Image 1 (cartoon, rainbow, N blue to C red):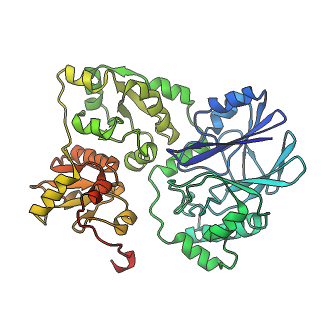
Image 2 (image 1 turned 120 degrees about the horizontal axis):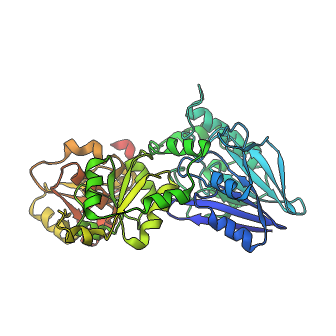
Length: 470
C-alpha cells in the first residue's frame, strides 16, 4: 500500500494518491491531472476511483478530466448531485481497492454532501482518514460556504458538523492518521496548523473542535464567530465542480496566444479583458502597461485573483515572463479562471520598444516613510493587511484598508496630497497600488518591505488592540 500526499502550497491544498496491488484511488485531485496518470503508469497500476470529499469552493478539482482520461469512477458522498456521470455513495458504503478498502463516512457540516473516507489496511484495521474540509489540523471547515439549501442556516450546518465529528470521527482510534484537504493559508478555515499530516489522537488533544466536554452550543458559537465573508468566486467554483468544465489542455492552448504590442493594446482597449501583470512587484513598480493590475506569481496568486477579480468568466490578458506563461495559465485555471485570451509577446520590453506609454509606481524605503512621519505627524499611512494583522500591531497613525476591500475606501483617500501604502512584505501593497492607479488614484507611495521593514526603522507602532474595544 502506498499513500502519497500531493500538496500545492499556493492553494494550501492536499490531494492524495493511494495505490494497492495495482489499483489506484485519487482523492480531491487538482485540475491538471497528468501527474496522477504518470504516477499510476510508473506503478504499473490503473486508476480505479476518484473520491471527492465535497464540492470544493476554493479550487476546481480535476475529477471530470481524470475520469475522461482514465475511465475511473467518480464518487461523492450522500446527497450530492452532478451533471456528469458519478456514483453517489451511501453512508457506510465500502469500496475495495487492491488489498485495502475505503469506507464512506457521511460527515455533513462544511457542506451537506461532505464525506470523510476511512482507509482500512489489508488486515481490516483502521489506518487513515481523508477528511476533506470536515476536519483540518487545528480547525474544522467553515459552515457558511454551502450553496443555499432552503431553510438550512450556517448555525444548522455548524450543528451538523458537531454531530459528524462526534459520531463518525472522534470514536476512531488515536493512531489513525488524519489527511485533510487544506492547511494553513486556506480560506476554508480560520486557524489551521502549519503541519499537513497528524494523528487523530494528537488532534483530540490540540484541536478545539474535538474537545470532549464541548457542548454543541459552545461549538456553534466558536465556529461561527469571526467568519469573514467568503471570496466572491467560491460559488462559481462550486458550480464548475458540480457541472463540469473544459479540458485544461484547451485552456492552456488558448491562453498561449502571442499578441504583438499593437494587437495587445487593441485587445485591451476594445474588449472587456483586464490586463493582469504577474511579474515581480519590483518589476511592476519600475514600469507596466497603464491601468494593468498587478498580482504576482511569487505570492498568493490564485486566491488573490479570485478575491479581487471575482468573476471566473472575466477575459484576461497576461503580462508575464515567457518561461512562466504556462504556469500562470494553469494556476488561474485551478480557481476557475479559464478565459485567458493571450499574452504580451516580448513582455514590457517589446511594449516600450514599440513606443507605447508606460506607468510606474513610486516605491520608497521604510526609512523614507520615517522621515515623512517625523517631519509631518499627519502624514497619511494606509495599512492594507488583514484586520487581524493590523489589530496585532500597526503604525500608530495608520488606517486599516484591507486589500480585499480596497475599492470600498476610495472616497476616503486624499485627493491632493501623497499618502503611503504598506502591507506585511510589499506584495499586497503593490496589488493595492495597481488597483488604485487603475481607478485613477496616482498619489500613493508604496513602502518597500512592508511592516517588517517598518519595524526595523523603529517607527512607532501600537500595542495589541482587542477588537471588542474598538
